[in-house]
Image (cartoon, rainbow, N blue to C red):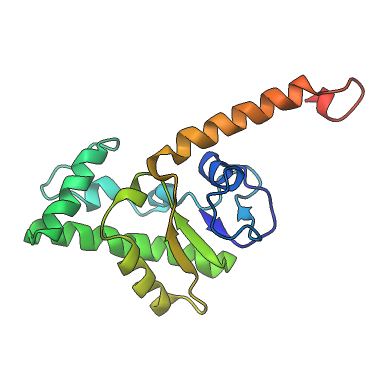
Length: 180
């Protein structure tokens, strides 16, 4: 999630963190874009960068399963313990993360970048990202881990659903909310 522009967060993760006060700077509003997808760097491989994070983190010729967070955590643990293949995999992943985040930072100039979802629970992501962003960005942002971690997506989705229910519950006929 990228922060720094005055717009109410719309994506599940950003909205959950914003609404629950998990953003460390209350004066900063999350920038989620028109449809709530700003900052979703996990899909950048669709723009011609064919190598997915699951392939980057593989220590074999087979990519990890996209939803196997335990396998990802194991690769990071092996790297921390000195396994050469795992270290190479983590380095590839971190390099890609730095480039992808740097692209967003250069475009949006945020004050703060929040790493959320399963990546927030990975030991060894935050410091390399902070260190490398200074190489690519004119004004490197602060980088922090989401306090919601893996619960960000589910919590944000719940918040979106509750907002919809509240909107419908309190809609008054003849107003803009009643037309939705």
